[in-house]
Amino acid sequence: RPFEGGSGEAVFRRKFNSGLLKLYSAFDTTNFELTQEDINYEEGIPFKLKNRNLYFNGSYSGVLSDTWSIFSGLSYTYGNTDVNIIESDISDVENSVHAKIKFKKRFSSRFKLNFGTEYFATKFDEDFSSDFIEEETYGFNNNISAAYLEADVFFSKRAAIKIGARGEYSELFQDFSFSPRISFAFKTCDNSQLSLAYGGFHQQPINDVLKFDQLLEKQSTKHYIANYQFNKEGQIFRAEAYYKDYRNLIKYNTEFIE
Image (cartoon, rainbow, N blue to C red):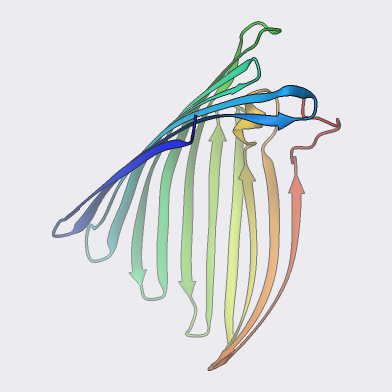
């Protein structure tokens, strides 16, 4: 079967006196089947793939007062993939939701505050069957709640600092993580700037890992960065030094992933 595909998208925008509403949706589907030549199989290896995806997001940004503004968003993702290799059938279904809301407060030209919260929900299921193995079903439910706070402080026209923190709780791992972040910038002259930054970050393993094993820890890293940049008409010079400490990364101690 030759490659077949279809896709579409729709966009809607509505402007209000104090804000803007945006809606976006998209879908795509693909389907094909082929026989892959292989030295070990005289008739080749049959391969089929059918994929369907749906995505939607909506956002609203607006002004609440002279010093307050708001941004909110919601997205939904649906993905379904069916794969057939020789006599093995694999079917994946993923449903994900991401919701967030953020507020910004401007106290003065020297001090601004951002804070907000967000929620991620993911349900992933996979069915596997073949002529040699009985049907198996595996997957996971992963719900994450997070909140963050960030402040911008301008000491002068030459010096500024951004400081913040993010807290995150994972129901899957039953774990709370706290991530402080700070950056400082100093304008050494009209054409150059020196900046320093530190940040902690956390990330969960990808679906292909989580669907088999949920007894894991979050992947994490700490970044230390020093940066110098000189920018003049027709000339740019940039130098950066960094140190990054990674922990709990996914590793394999076998020739093939098990």
